[in-house]
Length: 92
Picture 1: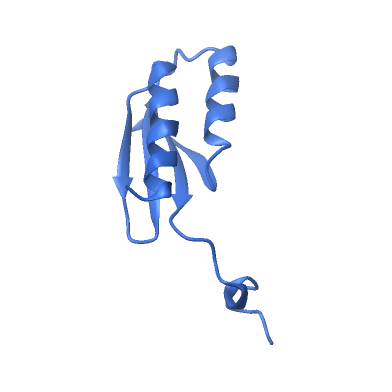
Picture 2: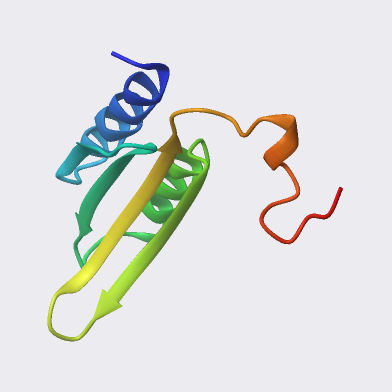
């Protein structure tokens, strides 16, 4: 399993320990963790959840009135090479 998969699995395990049902999905450039967040999550648990997802490269929360709240975290599979660090607008 690539390092991103190991990191994502660890994040998912810690979220599960906090009572969230988390799943791990593999993608070509990253591994993601997705978990539904219950309305009843306490402020203390929110702090712990944020501490856990802060280990990912990116994370966020999608909240809608139809589907509730979905927490996501992304762990990249590879760091960008030096030539790609500036992004598409970077001029050499």
